[in-house]
Image (cartoon, rainbow, N blue to C red):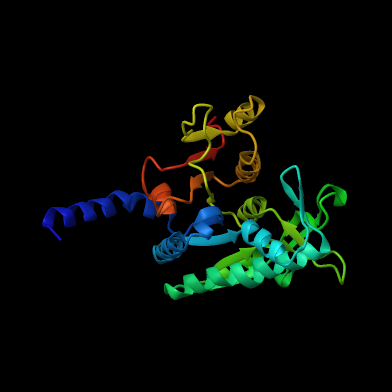
Amino acid sequence: MPTQKKIDTVKTLIDAFPFIQLFRDQIIVIKYGGAAQSDPILKEKFAKDIAFLFLLGIKPVIVHGGGKKINNILERLNIETSFEDGQRVTSKENMEVVEMVLSGSINKEITSLLNHHGVKAIGISGKDANFIKAEPKDAGKFGYTGNITKVDKKIVLNLIEEGFIPVIAPIASAQKIGEPGYNINADFAASKIAVSIGARKVMFLTDTLGVLDNDKNLFSTLSEEDVKRLKDEGVIHGGMIPKVDACLEAVEGGVKKAHIIDGRIEHSILLELFTSEGIGTVIKKEMK
């Protein structure tokens, strides 16, 4: 490698130094989904990035989804599923597959990848130690899809204290013996968990650049008021609404910043955290 290229590499590390100092010993919750969770190359780079954060002294917590894989398995098993207002109506039969895919397949794949890169990851769901409790969404309109009512932060914080990276499947405990539990939207699970454990940041990996205006230009920073106005104007619409709502819930609950970033970009987490410009949209409280 030429000397100048080596110097440029060191300069990049030095530029990142203030951010490393700032985030060291801080908890960062990362919602992992979309292409970053399905593309083999991106999966490997994601695992390396999380291991890198951990080795820098940052405390990552992973909350993952898995809707596409759930749909594929349901189709292969000829099990019907339906959606209303863009959300899955989770039947009891659906819930068995949801739990099998999220807890049994995806969760263990992520933990294995992280462990392979030299960090200690442990996979759990909200059923473990009943650490996530929920109630039926909209009084049961969505079947076994639920809204979180309580997060036992001690479970996650104890794992972090013991040097583990928690990898969390968004499934909540059942209210009654014999029930299968609740399927939780992974964005809102990430938000609720981030608030409960006092995370500094929550980051949502998506398949878009971030929040865009009507001309497809990226909003790099938005306040709560900006988000509410853009929703009223219809600029923020469709599938972006639940993501910004999860961001708002996080910052209103005390998380300093929520980030929506493009998980299709290699090392997107590092680019967002360790560069001044970042690559996505940051949502934060209005500065008074």
